[in-house]
Length: 128
Ligand code: I3S
Image (cartoon, rainbow, N blue to C red; front, side, top):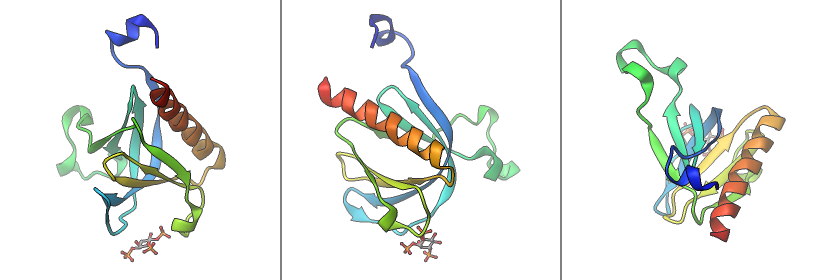
């Protein structure tokens, strides 16, 4: 990263809509609950927001800027995981704390780009 980016806003790598479900919390398996999520890759984190379109008027908040959750990519592992779902184009992200997420898109090119970009951030953090 450039010297400036250490002092300014972390670099926005990628943002878009993906299907998401958490499948483990601290190594403990969770029941799947797929939902469309607005996913933002910024700095060393993957940040999840609720899909604005899926929100009811009562759940809407000004700016809609409150993240649902955030994942630290340092030491994380990424694997294609088509065996873990009947959906196509599924990959699994596992954090060092044992949280596991499945991410999915029906669009091949889109999910490949996400995989590549997240992996490149993980690789960069591994080298630091
Ligand atoms: O791996 P599973 O258990 O077959 O995952 C499916 C279930 O989680 C299902 O919900 P319930 O059985 O809890 O009602 C979901 O609706 C499905 O989407 C899950 O399977 P896929 O293959 O879509 O990941």
